[in-house]
Length: 348
Image (cartoon, rainbow, N blue to C red; front, side, top):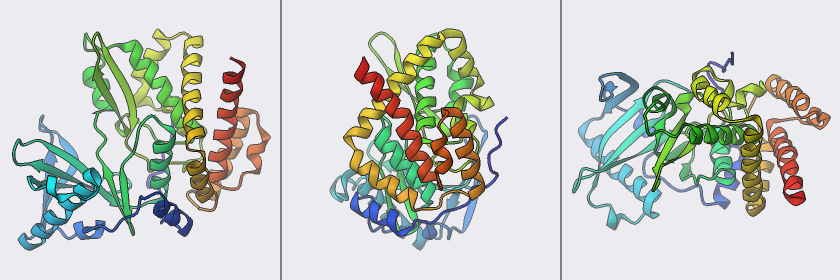
């Protein structure tokens, strides 16, 4: 059974990473920061449509503070969606602010409502933890998903990633008559591979979503990570493989039942090939990011030591034993895994 650190250590943004954020237009001045949202006057539990506690609290502010926050948060939404063009935002307002006391980042979730049609969207305000920033960037560069976020000082703004939470999907959707279980199994294999290659940990079912897209004859699925706090932090290799978390067992069983071992290998190789192509097209940006990671501290010496031993054994590659930090391990894991793929692609 995997054992996640109870409370991951917070790592501030170091100077090299701050320069990287400026270079790639991730840093901007924000009208509202994380600490501004902490001054709420009241709160009450937020329940879902079935009356179950979501572990989020809806927070309330004094009237003057609320008005100032409404203006600033709407401007932030405009920065996320239209690069700050407020002319298309005049019908929007902040309908709810929720606060989560569960987990590492204690985020605020802001609901933005369109008063013309009652359509709504969300974004998140969090403390800017360096581990999470590296996770977001690696997702943006190496996955099929583009990630939209902004940083100002110690505040992080993240766009909402739409989809059905993995635990909800497993409980309520997986046994629907029209669910294509083979496609779900295939996508989980690919997701599992992406997480391991770039060392993203803690992909328990509630830390990813399933994005369902209706097709002309069937449904397409994509598994997307939504929590990046455990980027290159834990020491055990199994922490970076979603297949080892017990709340993913239902989907793992589908993989074992529906996919032959050679098919699993095929999907793993397909995903590595796609990652290699993304890496190649963004190699300078990725090098800049990895250089920041290699000069940074985002885990403990004990965890780095454990992971380099386990990766060296897994890959049969003693080069891992020379790594001094998590950045070194990410770089070498990418190099060894994706170089094998490059060779196969050339041979093919």
